[in-house]
Figure 1 (cartoon, rainbow, N blue to C red):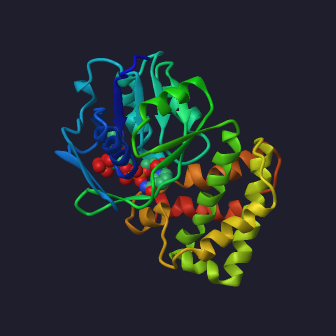
Figure 2 (tube, protein in one colour):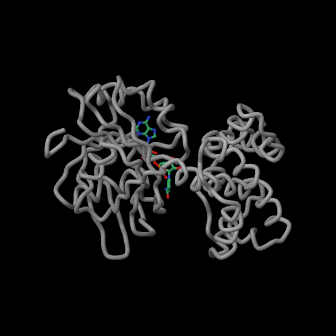
Amino acid sequence: MSDSPTIALIGPGAIGTTIAALLHEVGRKPLLCGRTAHPKLVLRFDEGEITVPGPVLSNAAEITQPCDLVFIAVKATQTASSAGWLDKLCDENTVVCALQNGVEQKSQLVPYVNGATVVPSVVWFPAQREPDASVWLRAKPRLTLPDTPQAKRIADALIDTRCAVELSEDFTSIAWRKLLQNAVAGLMVLANRRAGMFSREDVTELALAYLRECLSVARAQMATLNDDVAREIVDGFRRAPADLGTSILADRQSNRPMEWEVRNAVIQRLGKSHGIPTPISDVLVPLLAAGSEGPG
Ligand SMILES: NC(=O)c1ccc[n+]([C@@H]2O[C@H](COP(=O)([O-])OP(=O)(O)OC[C@H]3O[C@@H](n4cnc5c(N)ncnc54)[C@H](OP(=O)(O)O)[C@@H]3O)[C@@H](O)[C@H]2O)c1
């Protein structure tokens, strides 16, 4: 990859707009590829605001050649519909950085990327889209990537931006730790309540039991996580502001498809493949799936 790699960003939503704006701020100009042809992107944060001039392209036929680096920040439920972009933007020399939740970004993207290298990430910062399509960045942007040569190229592209990048030799454990947090947040969908619900002792007990189930699967997948992780995650929700939500709850409340497959069903599916009983997932997953897709 050259010193000035060509960069594209697919999915300029909450996370995508953040990365596009931080690159733009230091003079790197990613090609913006979206579903909606926004005239510009706007990122707001405590210290100010960054406007990224458009256009946001909305037709993959406009792409004439592959890019060196592609960030993809669509919801996991939107990956298949992004295939046209990936096909035009990727060849075997491209590095694709998945800015998506879950532990299966690589296997989910590989079918679409023409032999490019897919690098998963853990996205640590909350960002939210406002009704006017601007994005509110709610914490310091930070990513963790696996410590590989291709991930180093992503870190280089983000160097001198406001986004901190860590390369981890034990990315698997970090990604599973984040997945466990996302998985238990799924309980908020069934209760239709925010983080305050974790102050109930019965919800705490349920969350701990679910997290122990998730931990068994995580360890079978080679994550190194100790027993304390379950309590740490629940305590994190108990300490959080009572009105702290989660994107899967926001999606449910707006009647959008939910990322239940990559956040919850993955535990059940991988558990079964290892012969690990997943009784809580067996109740939770069909209800999340029905909440996302119906019918009814
Ligand atoms: N937001 C967070 O705080 C946060 C934190 C950690 C991890 N994550 C993860 O990051 C990923 C992205 O989440 P997000 O919150 O940024 O989602 P989001 O705000 O809904 O953004 C998704 C973007 O993708 C666009 N899109 C949808 N289908 C597309 C297609 N076929 N081609 C091109 N663009 C398409 C959407 O376009 P429209 O403008 O038309 O909707 C939107 O701009 C998810 O996996 C999420 O779980 C999010």
